Image (cartoon, rainbow over all chains, first blue to last red; front, side, top):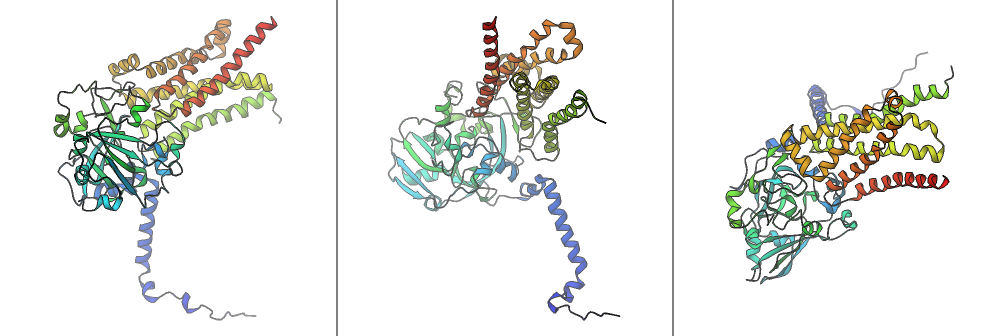
Length: 316
Length: 202
């Protein structure tokens, strides 16, 4: 007996003729895309190297270095941000749900316009620049990072410091419910950093809100961080909630933790060793051999005059 | 075919433990060649090999207490292997330092060893491991007799040196070195207690 099935394919299942005719092209595209994803997964660095090679600053600064950039991946997965843990991978892991909206910054102390400003107020009217800077960590590694930000001096001028303002103090958010690292007292929380007024006013000193032209990732100090490229990285305070203008040199977190090792100035200096290791060389992330560390991280022409006559061994 | 206990140890357990001890090394190689270490892979290798040196030293030191407390006498069959793995990871750690960190700049290495206490103590601990590794074979045990035991007590000093080396190199968070220090204190404390009990009996 022959059982013949009736034609029961619903019309919705019938391939559109146009698609059918282009099926070879479709298959080709899908396979190319799959190949791309698979090879991207197999060699994760390639997935991100696109940023590095094709990204161009939209509003470059004359201070920019022409050195090769570190990849977005390197910059956002290898972080020292002890509020989120002490391993380099911790910040990317633990800052995922960090709340940066709403955000406000309290400006206090010796200024004519002290107030709590919203982040929007802080940024309003500022021209964002792509600042490609070297970053040298006190631990002996370095990166080249395309920050997006504006000169701190522009903000300082707006709030009108009085003659008593000799130093600027920066304070990171203190919220152990969001920042698990703050549950343990390996540093004095909240994280506090400081600059001398002339350092804060220097055109190289910026407040960053982004990198690679995009919004700053949480693990890099979102939504607002300091960048002082001639000093060791830890001076560049992250996730800032308070900026205080003061008369005396502020007590900074790392200095309080170990005053023999981390001075107030902490300028990058190959001639002044960390008591436990040499600062003469650094490993640029992505390179095999170490390179020589430059005086003031290569910004000597711009900043050396700030310290003329100072004994940099004493004022490390 | 049934295996006797000693055959079982020799043919099954020893190769298994040997392979397991190599796993950290294999994982490190895998991650290195697949680019799944951090952005600073050379530092990761230094950190990992250093950590595993310390772990194998502590594993080696825990053999005697475990044997005595739980009467697991067969554990003695593994002590030499664990000790040699400590030396294996220690050697890798030392090589990463002179190669990836110093690029065979001997002058710099000498300066480091003489000037930086955490390197001095780490280097000393590594050097002290060499005579232990060299004399770890049955022949040497028979040859040196009582002296062998005394020589191999150097592991106490080596491990203390290793923990201090770790403690002195961290920037501010001492949680992990503290954990190793506590474990070491327990393992050495056990021996001190046993020593005084045996003295009293005499």
